[in-house]
Amino acid sequence: MRLRPHGLYIKPQGGARVIHNYNSVGLVTEKCVGCTDCIKRCPTEAIRVQDGKAVVIREFCIDCGMCIKVCSNKAKKADTDGLAAIENYRYKIALPAPALYGQYKNVLDVNIILTALKELGFDEVFEVSHGAEVVTKAVGEIVMNSANAAARPFISSACPVISRLIMMKFPDLIGNILPVIPPVEVMARLSRRHVCEREGLKPEDVGVFFISPCAAKNTGTHRPLGYEKSEIDGVIAISDVYVKLRNKIRKITPDKAEILAHSSFRGVRWALSGGESGNIDINSIAVDGIDNVIEVLEELENGQLDDVDFIEALACTGGCIGGALTVSNPFVARNNIERLGLLMRCDAGIKARRVDFGPVDFAELAFTRRLTPTRALKLDADMSKALEKLERMEEFIKELPGIDCGACGSPKCETFARDLVMGQANMEDCIFMLRRKVKMMAESMVELASKLPQTSFIQHRELRD
Amino acid sequence: MKLHYEVDGEEFAAAGQASGNIKKMLKQLGIASDVIRKISIAVYEAEINMVIHADGGTVDVDIQTDKIYIALKDTGPGIPNIDLAMREGYSTASDEVRDLGFGAGMGLPNIQKNSDFLKITSAVGVGTTVEIEVNL
Image (tube, rainbow over the protein chains, first blue to last red):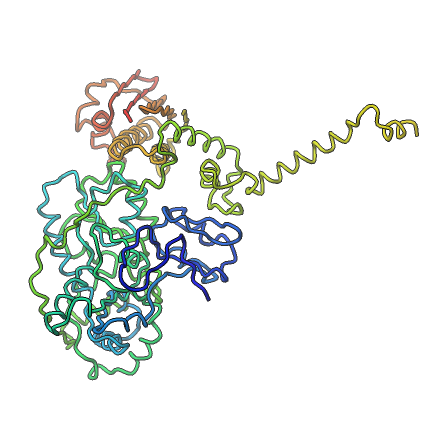
C-alpha cells in the first residue's frame, strides 16, 4: 500500500519540518476507484476526479478530513507519523488530545489511558488539556478586556480548519480570529522546557509527539498559522494507536495505573463542542460541523451577529471528538468524556499529579505572524480579466444541465464551469454536453449524406434505378 | 457584468440568497475584504427589507471594474417618510419579524453606512426602489 501525498512536495527525513503548501490528506492510489464520494462532500470543493483518481487541488484544501471520513474505499489517509518515529529521539513525550479519552467505553479514570499510552514507549505523557486551561485564561482575558470593537465577535483560533476556511472563503473575517496559539502548541513548548530543566536534557534530545484526532493539526506542525515554527516533532493519529492502546487499557486496573493526569475537566472538555466557550462567562456561540460553521460565518459577514462576543467554531461534528483520525462515534465519545468529567468533579478518588511548568506569560501565547487571505478563489489577478471569466462562467452555468451529477469529475456544474474558465477541464468532460455534441454530429452526418456532389456517379445511378 | 435575481417574499428562509450569490462572485473577483464586508451588509439588509415589508421583488446587479451597482425593486406598500425611515431605531416591523431578530430600525441606516451611494425612490401604494453603489 502506497500513500501518495497530493502535490509535489517531498517530505524531508528529520530536521526541518516547516513545509509551505503542505497538505495532510493523501491518497492510497490503488484503493481509489474514482467515485464521487469525496468530491461531493468536500466543503471547499477542492477535489476533482482526474484519470479515474481523486486529486486534491492544494490551494483549496483546508485539511478538514471530510474526504477521509466519507471515502467508502478507505482510499483517503492522513499523512501522519507512525509510532516508530519516536525512536529518533532520546526522550519521548506524548501529548494526548483530550479527544483520546472519548475513544474508550467504561474507562473511568484518565490515568489508565495515560498509563497505557506511556507504555507504548514514551518517557513522559502530558495532557494537552492542560494547555487548553492556559489558553482559556488568555482567551478570557482578551475577550473581556479588548477595546477593539471591530474585532468582535472574536472567533476561536483553536480549530485550524476554520482558520484556514476563513483565510480562503471569508477573508474579511480574518481580523476576528483570536490571535492566540492553540493548546497543543502551548503544551509542546511547556513540556519541552519542563523536561529539559528536570532531566537536564538538550532541547533537540526531546521528541514531542501529538496524539491527534485531526489531520489539520498535523498540517499545522508543518505550516503553523500565526507563528513561525511548531515545537511539535511528530503527529500520531489516534486511529493508528487505537487498537494497541485498547489492548493495554484492558490489562490496567485503576490501582495499577500510574498517576499521570494533571489537568482539570475545564481543559478536557475542549474536546467537545461548547467546551471552550463554556469556560468563559460571555455571550458566545458554539457551532460545530463545517456546514453549520459556514452558515454562521455568512451571518456574521452580513452583520447579523454584532451582539455576540465570541464564536467557538469547530469543523467536525461534536467538536474534536468528531475528528477524521478518531475511531469512536462522536456522540458516544461525548458520553464517554462527560462520564469521566462527572467523576473528576464529584471527587470519586481520581488522582492527579502536580506538574510545575513554570510561569506562563500571556504575551508568549500571542500570534507572531498575521494571518493573510489565501486568494484561492480569485479567478484572475487582473480585475477586468477576472470579470470576463466570471461572465463566461455564468454563461457556462446556464448551458450546463445543473444536476450536479459529478460524472465530469467536478462536484457541481458550477465548479465545472469554473474549471472550464480556468482551462482545467473540457466541455466534453460533461456527458450531457458530449451527448449533445454527438447528436449534433450525427445530425450533420445525416445532412451531409444527402448532399453528395452533383457529379457523383453513385447518386445518379441510384436515381436511375 | 449584469445579474438579475427574483426574491420570493413567501420564503423567509431563502432570503439572503441574492446577496449570498453576489458576495460569492465578488470573492471570485478578488475584491478587497473590507469592501466585501460593506457590500455584504448593505445588500443583505436591503434584501431582507424587501422580504419583510414588500413580499419580495427583484434585484439587479451591475458589476464593473471600479464599482458595483445594485438596484432592489419592489411593488410593496412604499415608504411614506424616507427621512424618518432613515433614522436609527425607527421601525415599522411586526412583532413576529422582531422575534426573528430583525426590525431593530437599523436597516436603512446600516445600508447608508455601508455604501458609497444610496438612493431610495418610493411612492406609497406603488413600491420602493433602493439603489446602492459601492466603489470597488
